[in-house]
Image (tube, rainbow, N blue to C red; front, side, top):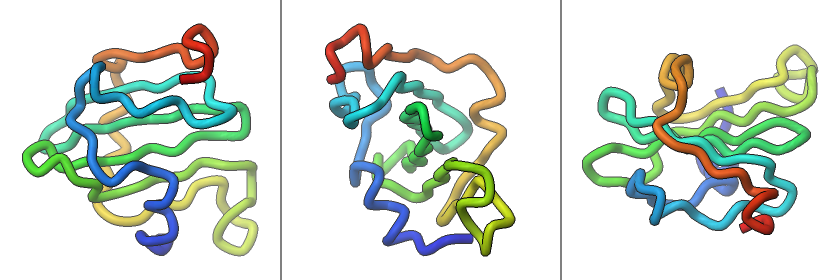
Length: 109
């Protein structure tokens, strides 16, 4: 587990789970994907070096968890490519996303 405040800096503080509410694609992003899963809204921001997966409470729409995937051995004293904090549910991204946006096709935004 990582520090929530530190990892949360890679996500926006709130997200309503709609296509219209998608944040601008971060620099270097390839794709954004969204799932509605149980009591969570999940926003994955994928780039060449990994991804940030932001988990929002479906009622309050506020950030409640984060998973960051980077290079192999980037976290936990070189033992993991993944670090997470807060309330996460990795099973949410097991199915096709509800919708996605190709950041490169949208001029990176």
